[in-house]
Length: 228
Image (cartoon, rainbow, N blue to C red; front, side, top):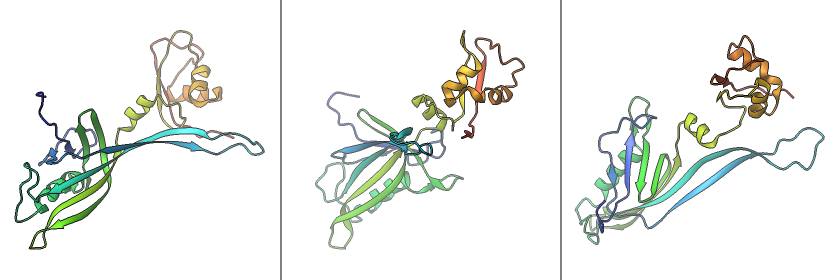
């Protein structure tokens, strides 16, 4: 990027979950950059505890997808050089924005998958909520200034999210590469918190001799229903 050039917030829209098929009209580039944005991080905890026990703190379950809140200004009052006044006001600008972030696309009949980029912000996401407030109108009653408050939720494919978090949840499928000294009960304990499920893992991986693991072997640890 050239020094001194103002970088505009950009939203690219894709019809597929892998962000490969960009839709017509993408990217959307803001005429007026937002004044701010906010990111919200959340974790999920479980309060479950064994019958008869007490004093146990909440148990971490998983990190939830981040939320991004942005406000977009649409202005056709003539104040901004990049968005001069027009007879139709902001109608065309808002429709172009709505087509990217909200309108249904493709065979799935669902809103687009989005990538928002601005400076250091790069946020793959989906839109979850949008409210628009109309503030000024021309003599024909058409809005010439409005603010759209939009909420986005971070979107990462489940496999990538699990890898990023290095999650040790028994509710997800895990994959391990056997290293020297590994045993099936040890690996089972690391993933499920209990070595007793090693026979189920051996069966899933069709191991004929689960007592001897060959380094470099790829093992799958499936979701299991823990026994009380």
